[in-house]
Structures are given as C-alpha cells and as structure tokens.
Amino acid sequence: MTRMTRDFGDTMKKDAVPAVSADVIFASLRFPNYKIGVNNQIMEIKGDPKVLSMKEVVARETAQLLEQQKRMSVRDIASKFEKGLAAAAKLSEEARLREAASLEKHVLLKKLRDALQSLKGRVAGRNKEDVAEAIAMVEALAVQLTQREGELIQEKVEVKKLTNFLKQASEDAKKLVNEERAFARFEIENARAAVQRVEEALQEHERMSEASGKQDLDQLMKEVQEARRIKMLHQPSKVMDMEHELRALRAQLAEKSRLYLRLQKELSRTKKGEENVPHLYELEGAETLGSYLQIQPCSDDAPELSKCSIQWYRVATEGAKKELISGATKSVYAPEPFDVGRVLLVDIISKGQEITLSTTGPIDPAAGLGTYVEALVRKHDTEFNVVVTQTGSDHPTESIHVLHVGKMRMKLCKGKTTITKEYYSSSMQLCGVRGGGNAAAQAVFWQPKQGLSFVLAFESERERNAAIMLARRFAFDCNIILAGPDHKAPLET
Image (cartoon, rainbow, N blue to C red; front, side):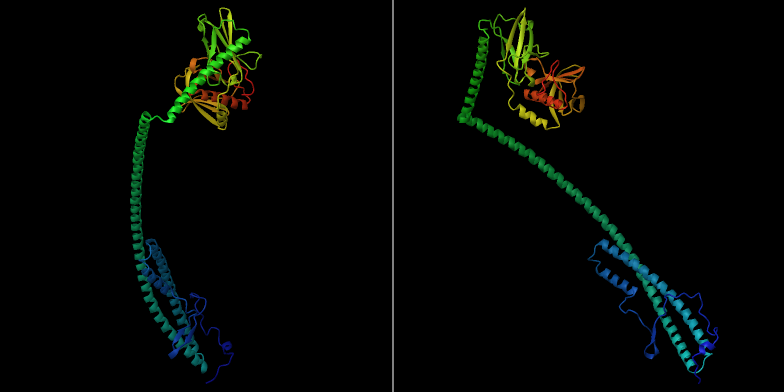
C-alpha cells in the first residue's frame, strides 16, 4: 500500500470533487459538531445543556397555567392562554424551519456521500480506508437524521394538538371573560340601585326626623311659653318688675325731654326779646337724624297751614347765611345726612306776616349709623329693598324693588328685570324726600338722569339714611357731588 504525499491535493484535478450545488440553503452558518460515541454511534455535541427547547418551555407553562387556573382571575387566565397560543404559534414556526433544515441536511449528506464515493475510487491505501470510514460515518449520520425526522414529525403532530388545545382554551377563556364581565356589570348595576335605594331611604328618614324634630321643638317651645305665662300669672318675677320700671323710666325720660325742648325754646325766645310776641306755631319732633319735624299750631288764632307759604332752610353756624332747601315747602320735613350738625329754620308766611321757627340746636346724628355705613363701604355692591311710591315715567308704583348702590353706579331692579342703571354723573340727584307726612323719614328722591325720577320708600329710617350716605360716599370717590335739586353740597359728607 503506497502512502500519498502531501501534494496529492495539488496533483488532483480541480473538477475531481463536484462542488456543492449553489441552491442549497443552510439553516445556520456553522456545521453541527459531532463525535463518535459508544459502538461507533454519532452524537451531536450540545452547546448549552441548560437551555430548554421551545416544546419543553410551552409544556411547562401549560402545566403551570392549569395548576394556577383555580387561583387566578379570569382576566389573568385569558392573558396566560393568549401567551400560550403565541408560544404555540412560535413553536409551529420553529418546527417548520427545522423540517426545512432537515431537508437541507439530507441534500447535503447525499452530495457529501456522492463526493466521498467519487473520491474513494481515486485514492488508495490508508487514504482509501479513511474515505471509507468517512462514508460509513455519513451513512450513519443519514440514518440518525432520518430518525430525527421521525421525531420531528411526531413533535409536529404534538405541537399541532397543543396549538388546537390552546386555541380552544383561549376561546373558552374569552367566553368566560365576557360572561364574567356581563355578570360583574349586572352586579354593579344591582349594587348601584341598592345604594340609591339606601340613600333615598336615608334622605326620607332625615326629612321625617327633621320634620318630627321641628314639630317636637315647636311643641316644646309652646309648652315652655305656656309654663312661663302660667308662672308669671301666679308668681310675678323680678324681671317683670324691672320691665315695668324701665317702661316708666322711658315715659318719664320722654316727658322730661319734651319739657326740656319747650323750656329751651322759651329761653331762646326770651333771649331774642320775643316773650310778649304771640306764639302761634311750634316745631315738634326729635331733632335727630332718622326722625321728622312737624309744624304744629299752638294757638287758636294761628292761620291754617294749608293757606300759608312754607319754606325750610339750613344754617351751618349761628349768624351764617341761610341755605334754602329746594322743594321743602311742606309742614313736615325729615332731616337728611346733610342736615347733621346744622340748625334747621322754617319760614311761615300768611297774609304778609312772616313767622320763623328753628330747632333748639344742630341736628344730632343717628346712633350707630356711621359704623353701619363704614361696614357697607367695604362691600362692592349693597342691596336695599324699596317700594316705588312715585315715578316720573309710566313705570308701575307700589311694588317691591331692589336698589343696588355700587362703587361706580346705582341700579334699580324688579326681580331679574333692570328698570334703570346709571353711573354716577353730574345729572344724577339723590336726597331725602322734602315733605310727605310721617313716611318722609323713610323715603328718598332719586333722579338717575334727566327726565327720569323716582320716590323710593325704604324699610326703615336707618336704611334710608345709610343708602344716601353710601351713594354720596361712592360718588365723591368718582369726583361727583351727589345732592338734591338746586343744592350745592359741601365736599365732606
């Protein structure tokens, strides 16, 4: 047997071994590693024995899913089945790729065996034995590959069964999810209805409790009042005695106040040398803001006031010039905030005879009115309930309105309807009603603009004077002097 030299490959023709066909596609870029095991068995060396196959992973996850089915929620079961279905699809794709790779390996082994058979006829000696051994190894590898193909076919069948099972399980899970969702919605609606019924029952119970509690409270108050009445009838208390004493003291104080005013007026007449002059009229009423002054005849020789000419004046200081109060020509006059600190005069002219009456001193301010107005100034808008008693237009009277006194404007409304709304201007006028009987102390004259005027009656004298002072205060902040007709108001209000 002759040994071939090293340059044997160089002496062989290049076309001795046929090239592998170019249309063969390999599944991987490297050739698998094999080794000869016991009894000349060809064994494939695995790179990482710890890496599990896709089939084992799917089987393990399926077993875990079945074990946890009772402990998991319906949504989690559906999610797991979806993942298992995706894994089965991936496993099916991998089996298809393995089948294609197996076919490629068969083609490769066939071509390799043909090449070795061709090479066996061209070599001799030791090399020929090596080629024969290689041919035997290739045939053994082909047999093992055929067995592997059978296993792959069986695995493919199992994967298809697993895929069908997972599809069915996924559909069942979706159906179960829908049923559970519908049941949950039904339970939620029932719970909401139950909660609403409970709330309605609680509200009804609260209403009944409030009504019964109010009735019980009213009944208890009536019983207490009746008990107090019976007690006071049978056993007068010290409180009743004090109330009687207070009433008596108030009556005495009012009598002494009237006596004081009468004496003061007589003293003033005495100082003026009018002691022997016949006294025909006198002023009655408290000389304070919030009240009204009225001319009363005190002699049978006094002419009737309806046949006399009357004019009211205000005097800032003693000896100062009289300031005519335009429109004050009635026997009754209610002082307004401009009159505080001033003396009021009234001239009565009848048949060429003029009689002048005056207050004993300046008009006193109303108690607590200044503090009340300062509290209202802090508000952006103040509302007063008024009754329109007279108007210069066709607007209906004797109806309740709301007068808004704001920092920039005044507005008169009836419900949601705005009657008039005007900003402070030189054409606007506001003052107390100059005449009008006992109600003059609660009424004002307001002219929002030329050609439109109202006489407004307030709920009380305090509200009337507060509205006048507040409007003049806001108008002054806008550099507007708000006063009555033909009247020049001082700058300080």
